[in-house]
Length: 271
Image (cartoon, rainbow, N blue to C red; front, side, top):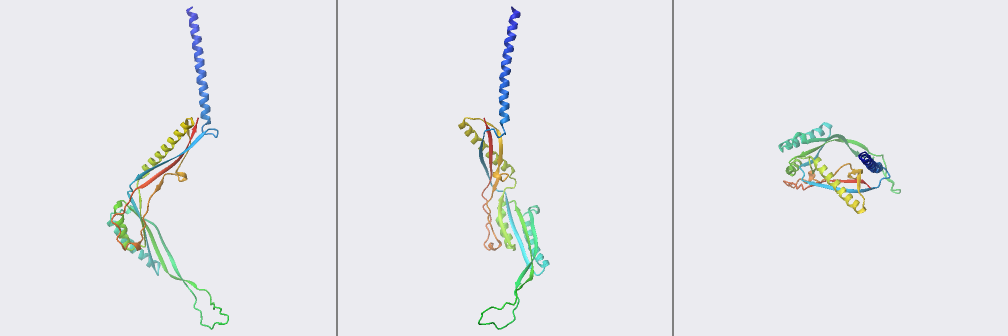
């Protein structure tokens, strides 16, 4: 009898193991089938967009100016530019602007011409026909040369932007624009904006999945920035020209806040 009991017990355990094995085998097949559907055109998906943004006070002010001079010779035009450039660089140095924060964007020299018409000899005109006398076209005559140099200045103490722009304008630069307020190290802010956008899209997807009575699977597709390849940066510029510096510039230009924004689109597979 004990041997028979043991045999029966073995049979029960064997049947139980077979049933459990079949259960997990069927479940595994279902999971494999579900997994094979993911990423394929047969998978059901939902697509949601998310937006995130971070505001920060700018800590950099970029100023742009051009020095432009005309003369009868290239050397004369270049000397005029060099004279103003030295004054500008000396002034920037007095304002504690480092050499690494002053960058020459481009230098150019080109001839300038005047169009001169040919002098027509004095002749009698036909008063009956009234036709004007044409003695030929004019020609281009070299008038001199123009030299120009464009420079970008990075101001790390943004509160000095107004005074620096006023000083540059009084030196005699030809064109002056800015300040363009930016953030020097914004990678962390970009990542924060992206994270907010992803969380926004995920929350929307979870709500929609609950309403549809489905569950979210893995992410099938992800895109960021609506084709711009990254977070979008917005900055407000104020423009100023050398002709406008007759009135004193403000000692401090309001810098406000910059907004770094990220827009993402996420496609989730559902089951």
